[in-house]
Image (cartoon, rainbow, N blue to C red; front, side, top):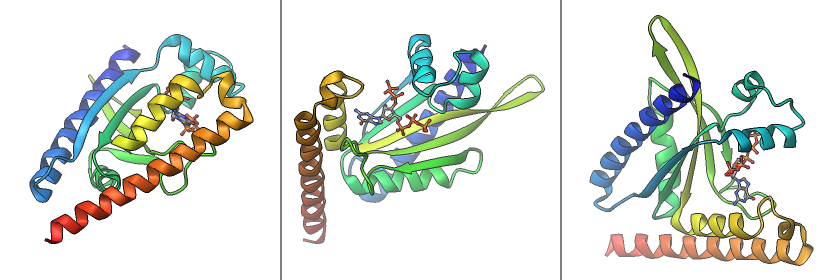
Length: 193
Ligand code: 0O2
């Protein structure tokens, strides 16, 4: 039943994101969301995360403390799209943005860039309504490229601890941010022509 509640909440947010995408695409006359994916965290990964946080590995602790048992990742084309999608998500009256992390404005020490919104979705079954939390990660195509390669090579891996490797991958994140901004400037120039 718990898994089904998370799956339901994911479906609700994905349906909203499709509407947000249609709305923004119509306004801007260009595609905004490139791809969207979702997952429910595996039991193994839940246990590992709780142990990393020094919490006991129980079902109750997981549901109460973890915000990302249900996760959705949205990849958009340009870096300004990220904030527009986040704004549209905040405007939805039947879901609540409970928490936000802006790792685009202030990237993580690793170089990771993304916006994370923790969205509360009311899930009603019979006469009971529970608010189920979904972590929504929104980032650009370029930021996603960096994060995917970082996950493969460094994130939660011993290579990520090596000082030079850590510095080098963080440097590539800066390069990506610069290219993202240049592409945005270029798009804006083309739009005014
Ligand atoms: P997985 O396997 O992707 O699910 P919090 O509970 O909010 O205090 P939390 O959840 O650690 O703490 O929050 P944070 O830092 O916002 O990170 C959540 C997720 O962001 C991670 O989930 C990753 O998906 C992603 N992430 C964060 N930092 C990095 C990074 O340096 N590199 C990469 N590639 N991804 C990152 P999980 O559960 O760690 O992993």
